[in-house]
Amino acid sequence: MSRTSTENPTGGIAFVNAPAAEERKGLTKKEIASDHPTWCPGCGDFSVLALYFKLIEKRKILHEKITTVAGIGCSSRIPYFVQGHGAHYIHGRALPFASGISLSRPDLHVFVFGGDGDAFSIGGNHFNHTARKNIKMTYCVMDNWVYGLTKKQTSPTSPLGFKSKTDQWGSVDDPINPMKQAIAAGATFVARTTHTNPNHVLQMMEAAMDHEGFSFIECLSECVEFYAGAFDASNPRKGGVFNEVPKTHDVTDELAAYKLACEPFPGSFGIFYKVNKPTKNVKEAEINKSYQSKVVGLKDWQILQKNFDRMK
Ligand SMILES: Cc1ncc(C[n+]2csc(CCOP(=O)(O)OP(=O)(O)O)c2C)c(N)n1
Ligand code: SF4
Ligand SMILES: [Mg+2]
Image (cartoon, rainbow, N blue to C red; front, side):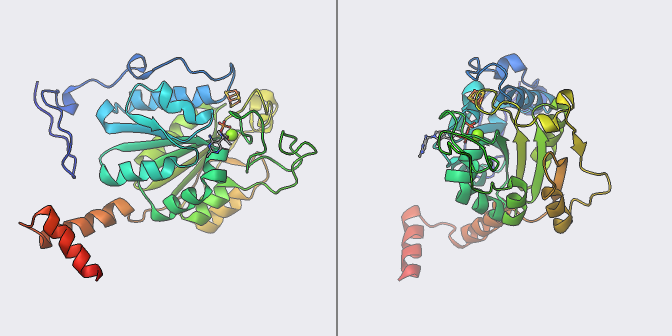
């Protein structure tokens, strides 16, 4: 058994007497599954959670290398069901919280989960800004086209005519298109999947995790209680069609990605857009490094004083 030195660039936690990561076995589902999920039987969110466990198992991600963050909503309950570090945070505010984690601990895989309301209503501005800043994390939005937790209000992705407690005569507002929004906001990885195709969900999660930057996945996840059948047209077992992004699609072509995003439902599934750009994590680390070299030997209060003097 050896002592791990975590490659944490900011210093921080050292796991005394823990075996080195390479000597340790990956976690099993039993070790990472927490409370029994409290979702309604048949809810699409079960599938997303199961595939997240599979990802952790398959990629041998250790407890101290992963964190699971969410906002508020049925989908956002995920961190409760994962035996690991994470936070069930404030409605719509999962991304700023996750950004803090990512920027201070770039060695972690930061996974953020949430719903369409959490991501695109109350959290809409955070979505745009986290995407444009290209902060390294994976954001999986479990889109069920409705507010599930609060029992059926119209969400930003509910289609026109959707009858809910807030639109009793049917919604009259054009829904947002998460894929168009993610591309336009500047996300460097944009993918689409559906809970009814587990292999595909895992494939997208792996690709997103491996992306150096802000990776966004829209995962259709049916709310069987308040919007049953919403995604049948994308499910071959219900007479629908599941079309993958054509092999000829150039994922670095923003306009081509936009065209895919404009296809009528059920559209295509897969990676629409993926480009490499420097992350905020890297850019900030460079600034920190260069500043640290200028304040060698100074005490904290002296560094603060220097900053205040500069602001005069
Ligand atoms: C500041 C704030 N406003 C409103 C709420 C009430 N609220 C809780 S979850 C939710 C929407 C959930 O919808 P979504 O994000 O789509 O998640 P789902 O339950 O469908 O998975 C709302 C409006 C809240 N908890 N906090
Ligand atoms: S209300 Fe809908 S989204 Fe919430 S747990 Fe039940 S089926 Fe899932
Ligand atoms: Mg929802």
